[in-house]
Image 1 (cartoon, helix red, strand yellow):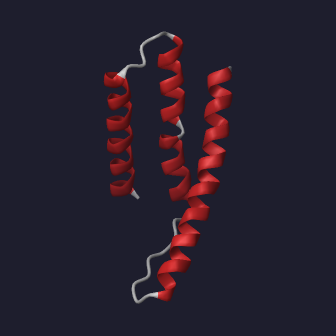
Image 2 (spheres, rainbow, N blue to C red):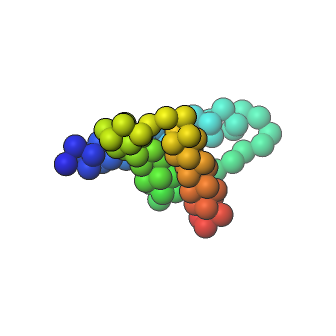
Length: 90
């Protein structure tokens, strides 16, 4: 139950953070010549679902005593691959 709660809290916080960050970057870029569109709520949610899983996986591995450098690198690689997949699909 603790891990589910941690995931839901991280998901909500990351979704709003990604939307806020996209808006700030969009405002900064609007001053220049090049402008990119801020992420939609759906895109922010997709990225947040993957990124919110990282701390849950890490704390789950720590709870069983297997959170070394190798496992942390695997989590980071998983996150990179998942974000790349989301960027290609959306």
